[in-house]
Structures are given as structure tokens and as C-alpha cells.
Image (cartoon, rainbow, N blue to C red; front, side, top):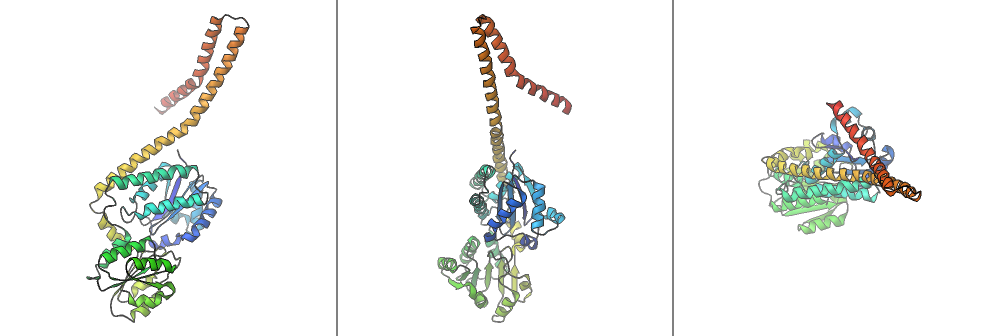
Length: 403
């Protein structure tokens, strides 16, 4: 049985506020993994951080000790920690990550970004020497299973990203997108999807900003928009009708004071969708008249709608996962028994050589060949059968005891 464990917290087990407390920004993750490995004694460590989940995986560290350490690291009482997190070990951990990579455990069923995020997590393990034999064995199987789910089912046929859900939510506020201005804060994959879905829905005016201005320029150019300097964000808030934000900032970058100033300069509603975790927008912004603020937890209704009627697809995908897990388990059993077979063969060859030397010596001493061969065959058979006989007897006794 492979020594592999996953501990995590996601949109199904906790609130956004609690998920924010355990979020680790990309620039902090390598340092965290070094501390994680040293503090727990784990041999291999990895981390997966997305807008809806935080997961830690490892091998070589006691699961109970790791749970205790994680709770202490994030300063969450252990009883609360055990309530909001999940822990999977060995093959159950492999199955969990297969489902995660396939998009079966995502807020938006079948969303494709999670596959790439998990591959990035594995690459990060390799970069910090955290990916040893276990990770090199587990993750290829996880990725292979996820690819089969996506190629053999229609789980990814519908656009069910959080960005797409944000567009659908906006339709409840605005009947016509053509005259609206969209402001994108951040320039990652989520922003690319938001730009794609909103412009496809009719938005013609796009503003983009990012801490790295070149990334904002590239996103704006793709959708014929305008790039603005991140430091000038507050000066452009009043221009926007829709703001979508998804950065890796550890603290809020849009405050209640910022939006109050912006709303004094406009006479129309402002729709803000905060896709970041931790949140980019202060929660109190939602209390301002004319402002509609939504975060990741608010998208759950859209998720339920997207998943309605897809039970057959989910069942098919789960059956593929189970089949791939069975194959993975069988391979591990084969790998585990190979060293034992090699050791057994080596011992038998040594016994054979010892008996052969005895037989040759007896022939030199003049003992008749027929007598030597009879003794040689009997001794060799007895020695070869000793270990299997002891094992079979033990198995028989165990069976009687269990009955």
C-alpha cells in the first residue's frame, strides 16, 4: 500500500472566510513547503492552492502529526480544524486527487483549470526536491485518469468556470451588456476567461490592470481594450459598470472607501464579482447603495444549476476513476512483491549451489552416483518446499481462526 496522504479544505467543507485563513500566495509556497517538510519529517511534500480549495499532500509523515502541525501553523483550534478539513490516505488519497484533477470535486463541475493547477503543484514539488518515488508514481496515474475522464465523457462540454457563472449572474442586473464597461483586476487565467465570456456576451469596453503592467497590456490588446497602471486603479473605478477581480494579493485591494468615492461620481449600478481567495474586495463594499458584490460562495446557486441533470455524466466519470484506481492498485501490488520474489529466488539459488557442492564432493569421495543423485534431489526438494509450506500452514491457521 503506497504511503501517500492528502489533507484539504474546500468550498464544500468551510466558508470563504475560513479558507482565506489558510490561503498561501504563490510567492510564499516554496518557503512554506520547506517548513512543512522540516517540521513534520515528511519525505515528500506538495501544495495545491486554488480559489476554492487548499490541499496539502505528503508521504513519509504521520497523518495525525501533520494534522496537528497544520492546525497549529494556521492557528486554528484542532477540533475546529478536524471539522472543516478532510484527510485521505493511501489509495483513497489517490482517488481523491484523480477526482480533483478530472473536475469532479470542483465548485464548477468539469472546470478545466484545476488539471493545470495540479500539474503546476507537481512541478513545484520537483523543483524543491519534494517529489520522490511516491509522487513520481502517484501523479502520472492521477493525470492519466483525469485525461481519460475528459476524453471519454462530456464532463467538460459545458463552460462551467466561475468566470462563466459571473457572466450569468450579471444578466440578473443588466439586460444589455453592449454599453457597459468591464474592469478586470488581475491578468491570470481566470481573467482571460472572464474577458472571453463577457465580450462574447456583448461587452465592448474593457479595462485591464495588473501589478505587472505588461500582462495587463497583453490582456487588453487581445480584447481591444485599455490597459491601466495598477497604481491608478482607484482613479478608474468610477468608469466601470462591472468589476471582476482575481489577484493573489494577501489583503484587500478594493476598499469600502474606494467604492464610496467612485459611487459619488456615477448614477448607475456597479456590479463587482470577487473571484480571489483571499478576497480582493472588502466585504463592507456590499453595504453600499447601488453596489452588487458577489464572492465565490455566492456562486453556489449557479453551480447547482450547472450540475443539474448531469448525474449520468458524473456516474460515468466516477466509473472511469474507479477502474483507473483498480489498475493503479494492481500495479502497486506487483511492484511490492517483485523484491520479495527476487529475494526468494536468490535464497533458492544459494541452497541449490550448496547442495550441488555437497553432491560433487560425495562423488569425489567415491559414493555411487545413483545414491548421490537421490540424496541431492530429496534434500533440494525439502529445502525448496520449506518456506512455502510454513507460509501455507500459517495461512490455513489464520483462516480457521477467522472462521
